Length: 113
View 1 (cartoon, rainbow, N blue to C red):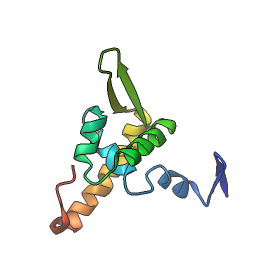
View 2: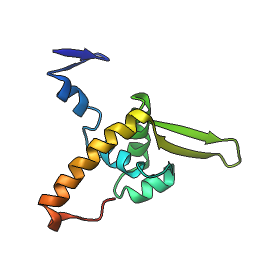
View 3: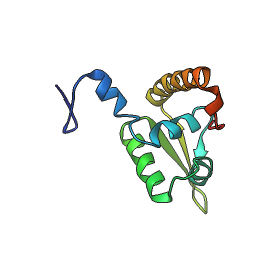
């Protein structure tokens, strides 16, 4: 067993999957792959996510150093979220899984980019 931040994992694969486990984390990482995004933009393109859940998931991703947020000193405040190097490396793997899905199940592609 592996221990990290008070949680136990069966193996390193179980540990790595915890970073993207759940409905929204992998989707958010993929949305940030090409360029930084603002909070409301992420909410708009991530159909079905509530403001509360989006805020929680962004904080979780930030706490794991997968994303950073940049706060611009202007009024009203402008905040952008972007991938860290660690997040970009993980998102490349997620994109490979997405490609596998598109190859074998192209009829299910809903345009989630």
